[in-house]
Every structure is written in structure tokens, then in C-alpha cells.
Image (cartoon, rainbow, N blue to C red; front, side, top):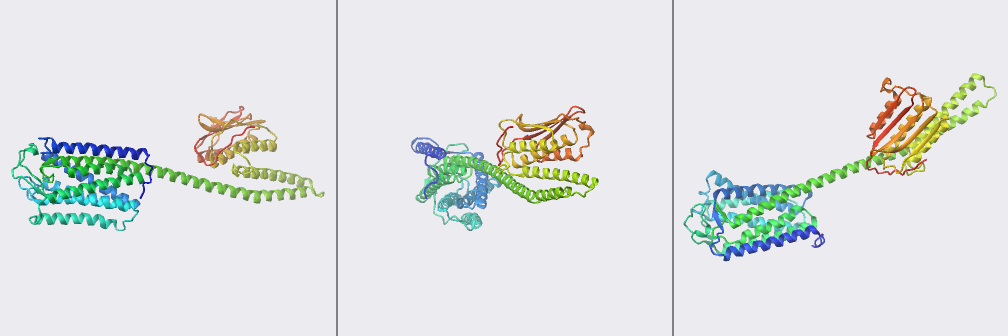
Length: 520
């Protein structure tokens, strides 16, 4: 299956460079161990050996948990096999740590002074099995094959490992030797090269070669998965598996399965664990970043859905007002005209008919303004600034006042909800100027101040004391509630005999409906 990522991808190029660099360095180190006389491939250091095994247990168990989580979330075949492979390694490493801590390592044949074949078989089998599982998982993932029984794979791998450990420990006399081991035990801290000569048997060498080949194969598959899917954990795993492969091929006088013995292979496995740990951290960070992006996308989607629903509701109400209430008011206006045209009406009836006609005119004007306010910016009513200008003109014509509107260039994007509420607040302020302020001049300005969208309605009326007005007064309370709905702030500046100035300030955020500025 071809790689989905282009070869020129910088991240893929960096990964290839890292793998090539690691291969070159480890190849040179391996050659040096073989040809340089007296270069010890390991030392006796029980504390360091215990730390290495403990770190390996924690890291591989964490990798198993993360792999299983990835499999449960996305069903990735490679993740299921990675979880099984690292669980096998964690099981073997954890048992080794437990035996050393409890002092049962000698009884289990893990000490160099009384070595048995069981620890060597257990260690090699675990590493070879883990490498094979990683290879199978990589092939399955690249072939886009599903793993229908991931839990059975995970539990079965761990169960088989435990059973084989028990079988090896019960009777290892029938096992063919993988290593010929010298009888003398060196002092603590002595280099391995000072010990009586020991070497792998043909079967042991073949097993090591098989493990190394499988780890390199798994590294190549992890590289391809990284290039295809971009999971940062696969990139780190590819590099780490190269260290694991060389930990199988570097010769040592004693296999690292014995307690207290730290060989070059053990150190390479420690480096593998460190690389894997860094990869786990990077993978978790990548998952968190993806989660944040997904949450942000969901939030934007919810906002868009809510905005769309609000726009549809506005359009529906606008049609109902236009086709229902407004038409009924027009019919009532026509009926009133016919009534006032009657010659036999008395003076009181004509007065009441005139008042009724004025009330109908006011209701009709309110309905028309409501329809205009609820129309979408893309509809024939025009842009927000045009709606605001028309609202001011209609106010001036209706109440016979001088009204001026100015709009600074350019206006910021504003959501449809914010446009509607801002227009309603401005209309309420204009209405208050006519009904309560006895104003002769009203000025309306829209623009930007300190990065916020602002509408200011000012009049030259008689003014009032804002502190003496109850906050529950319907008009002012309504304006404050509308401002709060769109995250805005409403400010009322007024003094007796000095006019009133009402300011609406709205934070500017990205909106689905743009506002095109206009001026008048």
C-alpha cells in the first residue's frame, strides 16, 4: 500500500534522517564492541539492573494502555497489536522486578552464579513475541484489516506469556541451551570481559537474529504508518524499535536476563524505553491538541446551528408580522377611514375615530419597524447600517422630530442576533426620546470605540436622573436585558434639563453574517 504522505513531507524527512542516523551510530558501536580488545559489553550492577527493569515495566505498561485506548477509540489494528506486544514485555519485566525484590531470583535461576535456561528463554521469547505482534499489527493496519477480538488478543497474549513462564520455571532441563555460561561469578563492578568466556549457541544466535529482524521489520512498518496517518507515536516507535533491534545483535558474554548483570543490550533497551516514553508523551499531547480542536469545532458548529435556527425564526416571525399583524392593521386603518367618512357621526365619535386612527398608525409603524429589524441582512431590507438609517428616517417622519444618523467606516462583522438586538435597543431609545424627553433633535451614531462596536443615541430633551428611575422600569430594563443577551454593555448618561445619551457597546467576535458599512 503506497504511503499517503508525500516523500517531501518535512516531518517524514526528519524521521528518515533520525532512523538513518541511529542505524549508523549503533552499527559503529556494535563493530567497536566486536573488534576493540578489552571493551567490556557490560558490568555487574544490581541497582542499575533493577532500575532498568522497573523503568521498562512502567513504560511498556503505559504503552500498552495507550495502545488499547487508541484501539477502543478508533479501532486501529496496529494499536491493538501494540497493546498486546507491550503487555507481554511489561509482564516479563514486572515478574523479573518482583523476583529480585522478593529475593526469589536465585530460586528462579536468574543469578549468574546459579544460572538456568528458563530466564533466558523467557526474555528472548517475550522480545521475539512482542516484535512479531508489532509486525502483524503493522501489516494489518496497512492492509486496513479489522481486529474483531481485540480483548481476546490482549488477554491471550498475556496469558500465553504467563503459562510459558510457569512451564519454563517448573522444568527447564529439557530446554536446549541458548547460551553457554562460564561458571565463575565475577565481583560486583567487574567488567564482563574479565569473566570466563561464554557465548550464544547456534539456536541462541538464530533466536537473536530473528528478534532483530522482526524489530527492524516492525520499525519499517511503524515508519510507513507514520507517513500515512501522521501519528507522532508511530514515528517515535519506529526510532525506538531500531534500538530494540540492535539490542538483539550486539554480542555480550552473558545474556542480560540474569539479575544484577547490565549489558550493552540492556542499555539499548533502556534507550528504547526512553524513546518510547517520549513518544507516549508526544502522543498524549497530540491527542489533547486534537481534542481541543474538536471541542472548538463542535462549539463553532453549535454556534452556527443556533445562529441558523435564530435566522430561520427571525425570517418566520418577519413573514408572520408582515402577512398577519401588519395586514390586519392596514385593514383596520381602511375601515377607520370609511368610518370617519360617515356624515352622521357626532363630534365625540369623530374624536374617538381620530384617536383610533392614530393608534393604528402607531401600531402599523411599530409592525413595519419590527419586520425591518428581523429581516436578514441579505434580504431586500439591506445592510445593518441601511436598516438603522431607515429606522431613524421613519422615526423622524412619524414624530416630526429632527433626527440624524452617522455611521463610521468600516463597521466590524456582527452576528445576526447582535444586529437585531442593537436595532431594537436603538428603536427603544428613539421612542423614549419622543415620548418622555420632549426632544427636538436626536442624533444616532454607529462605529468603533476601543475595539468594540458602539451605537450612541443622544437627544437634547429635558433629561432625567438615572438614579431616581427604578431599574425595573420596563423600557430601560428591556434595553439592559437585550444588551446582556449579546454580551454588550448599556450605559445611560443623563441629567435634568441636559438631554440623554444612551450608549450600547458590543464586543466584536467572528460572525457568520457580515455587516457592510454604510453612511448617511
